[in-house]
Image (cartoon, rainbow, N blue to C red; front, side, top):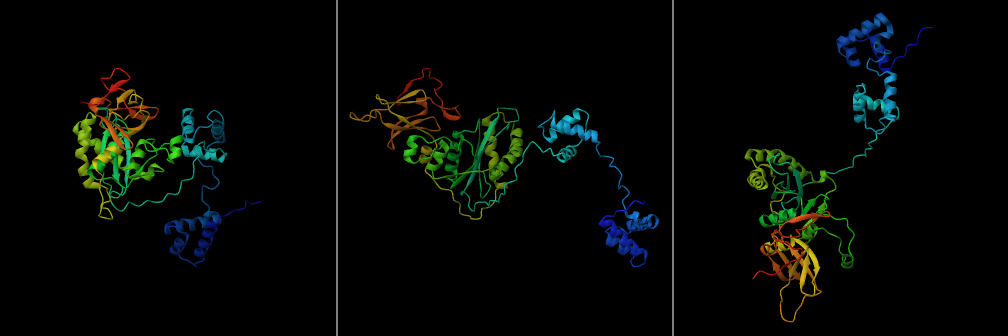
Amino acid sequence: MENTIVLTMKEQRRVEVIQRVLRGEMTMGGAALVLGVTERQSFRIKARVREEGIKGVIHGNRGRPCRWKLSEKAERKIVEAARGKYRGFNDHHLTEKLEEEGIKLSREKVRRVLRAQGIGSPRKRRAPRHRSRRMRREAEGMMVQIDGSPHDWLEGRGPRLCLVGAIDDATSKVPAAFFEEQETSAAYFRLFLEIGRTQGLPLSAYADRHSIFWTDREPTVEEQLAGKHPMTQVGRALEELGVTLIPAGSPQAKGRIERLWGSFQDRLVSELRLAGAKNKEQAQAVLKKFLPPYNRRFSKPAVKALPAWRKVEARRLEQSLCFKYQRTVAKDNTVQFSGALFQIPRPSPHRSYANKKVQLHVLLDGAVELFYQGEKIARFDSKTTRTIGLYRTNGRWEVSRYGPETTHPEQLYELSP
């Protein structure tokens, strides 16, 4: 019994067209156009049909085993390795391990073998979330994106630094940026202090979900009674200044400043290398010269010409952009803070602050101020207190415990004469 010839739809169509050519009902040019091949190829098909009949339209590789096909033994070895010795390895890692054992295959080939045997990838991937493009703010100063970029800015010539900065959402202008040893609350205080002094305060700030900006701690009893939610020092300061802090849901959401860091890690690093900067002070000097031409080159005009920066007096900026703590005054009218005692001066013969709750403010210059019911009752400047600098403890940044000249943990500080 002769073998039955099974043709695909494409092959059946070829037979019909070539037969019409052989009957003189169609030209070779028309046949080539219908078949979607060149006229020269249509002549080849016609010649094979004349010699072999309808088998002439069948591709010569049909029925032949693929020269690249894996043997059943090799496939079995891959499956056994994936289910046994290398169980839980991802496709790329498994491919590397198989190569070490003498089975050199592409990652895609290994993936196909595993999927055909019902072995899925150990790395479960979620479907991508739908994201919508966010348009720029209309006016300069309506929103700034803030972030820090830890990087080897000096390329080994000096310490590893963190560049803290902001970019205006409407214009892509960089209003302020500077180098710090680390990304801290004090660094963002200095950032907004610089922006507030030179430009004015923005209406809102877009930041990631760093613990500097947000906290997950439970509210205290006092906060619950006052109807307040827990806030970080930076969050509290921005709320006092009327700057809305907006959390970013992903790095892509604040892509403007992420792309800025990419540009700076290219251009600014080259400028630092050219200048031979070796420490933070030299790097800051290079950055100060770098920013104005960078802003002129890459900033864009805002939709609305009138900027939205809010002018705020310097004193109010300093009073908000600082560390604030509540303390209870001892019976001897002293306040203890971070291992130091601060003596409150005697305002009048008949007044005492004993057992009163006061606000203790630590300014960025190291000065300490005490407030009672909104009234400043004492100030200890940095030369008097010698409590300059910050240290990290339990995930928070606090004022340094002792000044460089303090040897006793309860050093008594009084007002300067």
